[in-house]
Length: 271
Image (tube, rainbow, N blue to C red):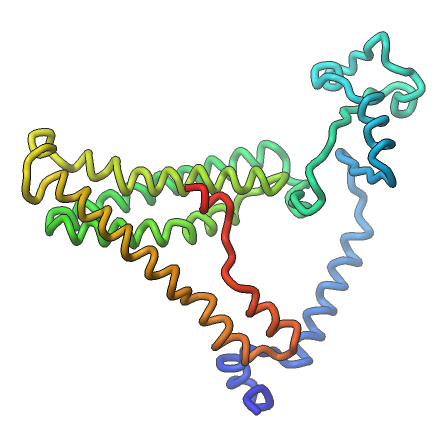
């Protein structure tokens, strides 16, 4: 009954779209595909599939050459001439990643653009680290317990912030994406938890009892051992999807998507 309500109720409570909107979206995508199909593209990378692993190994053993020879088009003396592309070009052949690991939509991004994107996201990460350090410093001036709570909250928010930053990066495969995510999350958590606490504490206060370095480390350990397990047991995001979004899905397929459980990133788990 809720999904049969007026459009504004469907939009905010049922999370559904009308058939007219869905049709217009499909038509717009079809028009875009038709326009892109009329353009000409220079091919730089080709993925080849084989029926058997034996055939794949044979081709790799026959055509594989060094990167230096491929870039300079220096044909080795023992390389079969009949295997040259158009009888003169030496191709760089290598075994690719698994199909489900390749990020197909990012393959057309140049190496220069990839470098610029990662440099910008790294710069933004440094700016966010400075902001986190200032926030922890203000909390530490109040007391060690407040600083430990702020650090725990920042560590919980870090994966979401890093995932947002990584959405602006292009990666050839999932391994590169996870590595970038791992480096950023590790940097955030390491700096927030250890480095900032050590930097803002004077050296003469490192071994004293009371509201100094030892007390700060004790508070951080206690909050990390209690807050994180409690939040993981509550599993609030999965419960929200299963009990709020799931019943309001417009069809069975979309409802099933809300019952998949929590999603974990390897780059985040390793930190």
